[in-house]
Length: 243
Ligand SMILES: C[S@@+](CC[C@H](N)C(=O)[O-])C[C@H]1O[C@@H](n2cnc3c(N)ncnc32)[C@H](O)[C@@H]1O
Image (cartoon, rainbow, N blue to C red; front, side):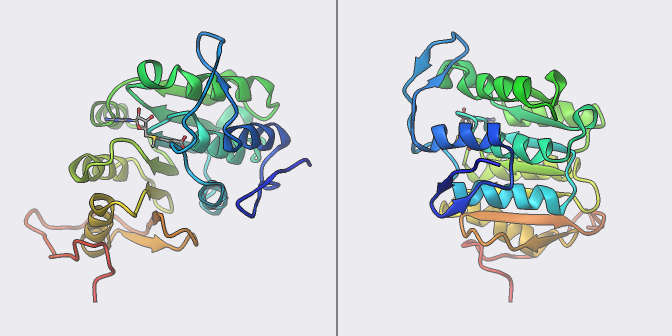
């Protein structure tokens, strides 16, 4: 199986079509937008190959069939997650849902186009394996919750303000089944580290999962949310684990 090595990460965990697209994305090559034109990309707006492979491993670990991401951008993380789903070889029973209100205005629809092209050529995925909701995450997640949806793995990489990410986590947590996982990106940002600090000390229904990537914060659901209405445990604002 062809693979690429980027930042020392071997992509052979996922299929050739995904590896090849990731090689192109990580190389910063121009990508096709919704208008079918090749556009230059800002190669700094992405997850790293190391983080992508960590997501693929985590998806396998939690047996993910349905994944969700907040913040599609150029589709780096979506490509890794679709690759993880394709390796399950159940085209009828897997799906990746992305949420991004600015996909057309800020990203030329490159994330959607990338994902659509990948599902079209992957025998393990079908047209219904990918969908993007072009709305703000708070609105889209609340809608999905109302529909009774559930996601085995949620990747949060949208608007990076503390309160937005806390809202994203709080809503995603209600759609995370036992054993499912939620991952926050960009732990280098104080706002994200602060959300991680809150989860570590206040959400006993989630246990931290080590990914080996310090820029990711991953947790797995280990129980129900049994907090009282007035529950609050003070937490380290820098995200360090509670003592
Ligand atoms: C850092 S980029 C995501 C990169 C992507 N995960 C990847 O690996 O290619 C952040 C994305 O969040 C989107 N975004 C910004 N505000 C958002 C919101 N309120 N809800 C959902 N997505 C949002 C942006 O349009 C952008 O595509």
